[in-house]
Every structure is written in C-alpha cells, then in structure tokens.
Amino acid sequence: MIFPLAVHCLDIFSSTIGMFYVSTKKGVPEYNIDYGKMEDPLDIMKKGFKVSVIIGIIGFPIICY
Image 1 (cartoon, rainbow, N blue to C red):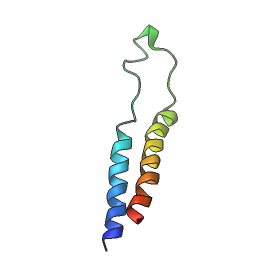
Image 2: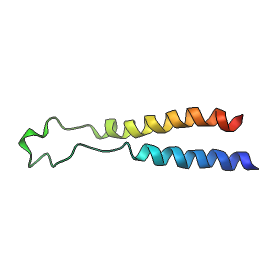
Image 3: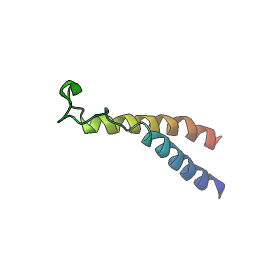
Image 4: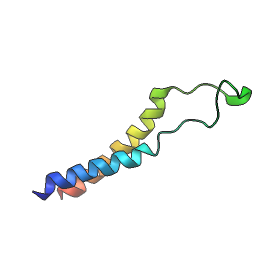
C-alpha cells in the first residue's frame, strides 16, 4: 500500500525539481541588440526533463529496495 504512494511522491518531487531547470536567457530579444541567438523552446524543456528522468532513475531503485 505504501509503494504506489512512494512512487507518486517521487514523481511529484522529481518534476518539481526539474521545473526549476526550465529557464531562458534574461532579456527581451526584440529590444536587446546583443541578446545573441534565439534559444529553441524544445531544448529549454529538455533540460528540465533530463533532470527529472535522472532523479527518477536514481530514486526508483531506492524505493524498490
């Protein structure tokens, strides 16, 4: 009974931590001349997804043990 609850708690924890890694460069590209190249939105979201997956891969065997 505790195992499904622990797995879902790990899911909430890992997605919350991964959410903090989703961020863009500071500034507005239309108004800053030296803003640089525009970032791909999918690459920005992949950073948070990768962090969440790594936490899940590490946490799930610990919960199973």
